[in-house]
Image (tube, rainbow, N blue to C red; front, side, top):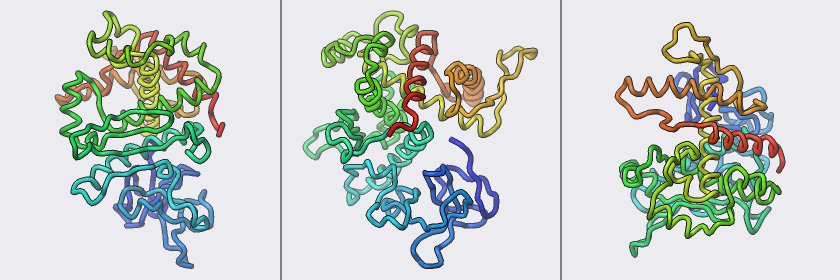
Length: 358
């Protein structure tokens, strides 16, 4: 995530800010120019004028979900038929907001989802709505468990991503993380994993790259339900850490791809933050004579994955050590072996090849 600044007073802004803490200007995100812009009321009363000089002179208005404090993204005021922003237009089902606590849970989900869409837009990846692709277009359901005791499962099916509402409850999510023996479980992680299944369909299956993908991740034609049952009954195979980024990635090539895709999004997003702060990390931790590695390139723009990995690995060593100094768990508790890096490089190639193809 890049850093933003107020166009009125220069105050540093962060992605979820809705008002400048210094000058009080209302803020809105303009996705077309990747700007969190200070706003002034349009003189005609038609909406808001963005102070970012890159924005259009035409007024903007907020996404309809801004009425619930669930979105601060803008849409052109000249398009009254466009009620929702580019991120919220993919929502099919939101929680029942008359249920106490559901508005807070939904807002947490939307924070994670908007960070996902920030990355997808920065990567210039194609996204098809259900209107564009009735069979496999992207859409989201945010669902609560049923009153009859039925349990909603987070998952993906033919472009429909379901997020269980209980995942927005920090205590429940942490309990599930412990029960599953996971190092990492966050709302943003769920979004990044499930969108990986969508892009497997779009970029691998429909992009005529099945054989290339199978050579790296394995044969996806193996029975998925049998593979899941085997995984939950027997656990991961011996020595899995040399081949897979997580235990769950071992159960089926689809899940290996989705887990690897999620980690690719973790990496590029975090590296952009480090780049925005101008961070420099010693290439060999503990060696005072080692060269210093600067996060010199915006990861969204680099051609080869080697450039990304050369910045990522030293950064994880440093931040893991910082976390331990505070008595916290590792920031990135994963080992990226040469095999896993090869998988990440394949994801990078897929993304680069798909840029701008809508």
